[in-house]
Structures are given as C-alpha cells and as structure tokens.
Length: 303
Image 1 (cartoon, rainbow, N blue to C red):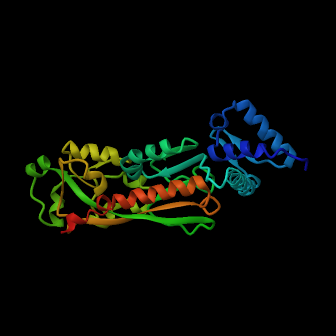
Image 2 (image 1 turned 45 degrees about the horizontal axis):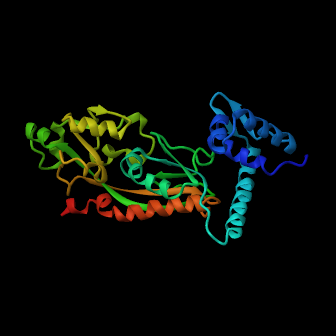
Image 3 (image 1 turned 120 degrees about the vertical axis):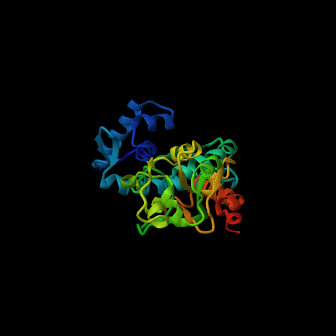
C-alpha cells in the first residue's frame, strides 16, 4: 500500500454519499474528472477497489463500506479540531441528506427546513422524498424518517412523534352518499388508498387494519394524489390529521371509531448521530414536532 493524501478521503466520502461523480463534484465545487481522478488515485494507493461502477452510479464495495466508517471518523475529528481552534464555537457545515416519507416530507418538513437552512449557510440540506425506503447501509441518505424501528446493528434511533390518521371525505361527497354511522356502512362507499402490491412498509397498509377485506376503488402510490382525488369528491380516504387539517373542505368520518396511530422515527448511523450537522438537523425536527403536537395527535377529534 502506497501513502495516500488525506484530502482524497473528502472526495471518497462525497461519492459514497451521492453515488454519482457529477453530484459529488457539485458538492465539492469541482468537476467530475477531478473527482474520478482522486478516486482512482485513492484506490491505487490503498490497493483496493472501493466502488463498483455501473449505470446506476458508484456503489460501495465491502472494502469501501469499511473505509467509510474510518473516513467519517477522520471527518468528525477534523470538525472537532476546527471548532476548538475557532474558540469552541460549534461549526455546523457539510451536507446532510434526509430521506423521508412523502406525507411527513411534503406536508411538514418542506415548510420548516428552509428556516434551518437560512440560519446555517454552511450546511447543505438535501431533502429526499420518494415512495420507497432508501438504504442507510449503502449511504443513500445520512438519516431517514420512517414508520418503524429496525434491528439492524450500528443504527441510532429516536422517536419523533405519535401521529393519528382518520378517514376523510368532502362535505359534498358525504351529502351525496349514504350516511356513515358505523364502520359497516363503509361497504356502500368508494375508498381511496395505496396500490396494494406497492405498499413498501407495513405502516402504510391502512385498509388491512381498518377495513379488512376492502379494496380501494382508486389507488395511488402517492398520498398527495390520494388527497387530490378525495378533494375532488371521488371517495373516502385515510390520511394523517396533520395533512387533512389544512383543508377545510375535508370532514373526518366517525373519527372515534375509525382512526389509527402511528409513530415517526428518526434513524441514522450510530457514527453520525453526534456529528454537528446530523445532531442539529435531528434536534430541529424534534423541536418542530413538539410545537405541532396538536396537529399530529388530532386529539380533539376523539372527544
């Protein structure tokens, strides 16, 4: 093994976190050719293949995954040294990519994260909202907001908040259709929900729990699309109270009898949990969730 430049580890981490040379180049304010050259030089010096190159991008090899842990430890120490030299002031900088479910991302975080970004110009926040769970182990995100905990080792988990879901419909729809006085009455109504064979986490399988045997008349992988269809008067839909409360045209249907409870969890790598950028982001989310407790819990609908 030849001596290598410590600076090359920054290029390595950028590619490991983004999976793309071009994306890593943008973060480092350079070009993709320079990033490629630095990765090649690091692999040559370490006599190890750190990435598998394929059309999807750069995927970490086993050797690469081991190096990530050590490189991030070096990165943390460098940040600590920088803070101490600066007189103890905490320097929050770098990139923080957070993966979140669509409802929490679009209807809660999207309105709040800009405030954090504005107060921390040295921190680059990436909000990843897709209808699937990304892999923390493959470094597709630094932290994730999920509906369940995991038994995978090496991960740090914190509960964000409880939230409740209710069945909603427009007043116009409810006036045009048979009344719903008990759960059995729903057999005469159209239900809107997720595409059954594309539900990627058990926490989104609302119908199996609330309406066993029922099949949604209109299905979408997007809660935003379900919301739009419900507001068009197409049918009834289960959705979080913190979302539905923003639309006065939506009415909860027998909420005492029909409601679900879920929890949002924040999960990240154990070795990232105490880094300034991740701790700042986690604390911000927790604080904002406490402020919005009434919106998440929907306690007023339960009487």
